[in-house]
Length: 111
Length: 114
Image 1: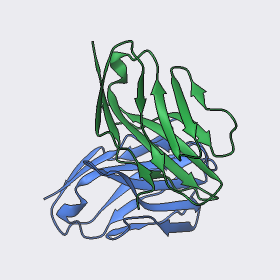
Image 2: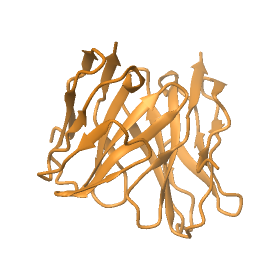
Image 3: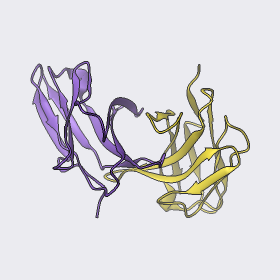
């Protein structure tokens, strides 16, 4: 099992550009989520999904879109990147309400 | 009010000694779960230990134990016999009720000195 994979590992964008952060898991987990990590802030939930076709907003959803067409994939879309979206992004998944498994993270810089 | 509070931004411990990392939580739901994660300088998030609100005993996983004091709403992580490889950021997190979502604290940076 590859676990939770994220691509790319690093990305630099210019203000106003759009992009999609990819997340995939091969553990048949029903729950998937996206977090952003900023210095001194811990991890904050952006969006989450409890199954294919079901998504909901977390604590900091503005500027981000998600969709969940399959159990395996949960992409995060930045519609018009802003410098405030410079962060490290983590995708996570879990089966039920137990331990969440995290991907390796994507370091995003918006200039 | 913050749901998860980690009051120690940084902690130092000597190798082979024990260290306690503090975590207090705030919830009105009688059913909840508490998690600790480790984030080394390489950046990955590593699950360490879990405590459910109805668990009668404190959770233990190898050198990690969770000092769960329900009445005080605290869930401190105890690391015994610290090793240099324990130097990392440690996060406490909580899941409430039937929710899948985790709420994280801001973390404690632990440095183990030789």
